[in-house]
Amino acid sequence: MKNEWLRFFVGKVYVKLEGKGTERVLNELIRQGISLWNVKRVGTEAVTFYLSLRDLHNFRRAIRPFPCKASFIRGQGTPFLIKRSIKNAGFAIGTFLFFIIIMLLSNMVWGIQIEGASPQTEHQIRKELTNMGLKPGKLQFSLPNVEAIQQDLSYRMDNITWVGVELKGTTYHFQVVEKNVPEETEKIGPRNLVAKKEAVIVELFVEEGQPMVELNQFVKKGQLLVSGLIGKEEEYEKVPSKARIMGETWYKTDVTLPLKTDFEVFSGNETNKHMIMLGNFSVPIWGFGSPEYKNSVEETNEHPVKFMKWTLPITYVEKSIKEKENVTRQYSKEEAIQVAKELAQSNLEAQLPEEAEVLKQKILQQKVENGKVNLTIHFKVLEDIAIGQPIIQGD
Image (cartoon, rainbow, N blue to C red; front, top):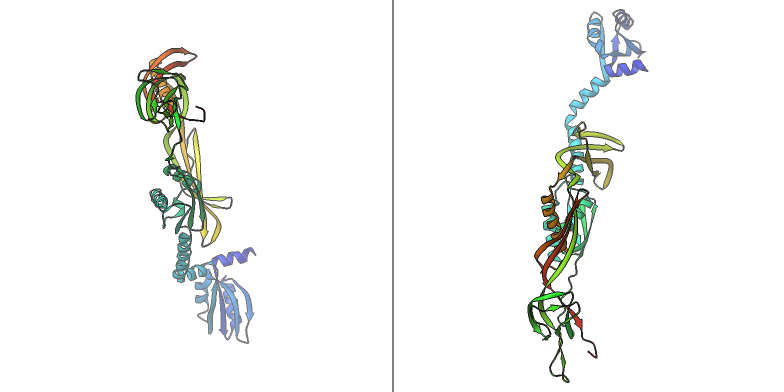
């Protein structure tokens, strides 16, 4: 068996020898050390046998003195396979390119379907998808996975409540739920306007109703600001009060900020690797070796390879390794107080209505202990303090 594999690797030739005295020719070949096997007689003046390809030149020279005719029927083994492959290289290359093209076409984006969106929203979504690089003709390998697309699109679009993304074959399907912006109620029932918190009135503009307070007046929470009852005592008319009443309000906030903080940041160093996964076996195609990062985070993006409608047991994997480093942030006392003030104001503004304005801030108490700055800050804010209160029977 071992000799057979060796002969196949070296190459062998199937020979037919015809003429008188074939026995003498065979004896002469053996005498010259030319290896023959599977020798068979064919008729009275012919024999067939196998000859090693490397002895072919010596065989030709050895049979010249004899009146015999040698016919080479076929060649077998690796050298002949290579020769045939080169001869048929055009067909092989064409077949290979055909499968590559079909595979590329099977892994491209050919369609984007959006359901549940109005024409205007659909146009916006398609525009944002194009900005994200998702469009027909794009290779799926170069796109993020559906979870990342869903998250990015939700962040970019502020007029949708939810979007579902699904990849079916070569088509991305988007299921959209738009935000239902409630229409402003045109008709408001009879109501009073009362103060929603303690304040000093700075601005008073009554569009409808009877004002019950004045400028620079201090009001308590729940105090009547504008009455929805107008007219004489026994001939009151109930109206929906409308007014803009800006008041000066006050907030007290406690904030704590450490002078020294340790945290992790990305250094900017990043290594990208690309590989093909065949089951549990990986074949790297770009990015060899491992980066010498002491601390890093790894992100993996997998793209199954498809051939027409079938998903092959092959996966294209992109792996990103980002270096992280520990950073220590150290504040002086003055810096920490300034940052804490900005942080406290930012937190307060996030809770206030859009039209509210922070007028002034004052530190009531500051203390540095256990490596932390503790501040108590008083804020003066200008905001609309009026809130509607329906007029019920008997008021």
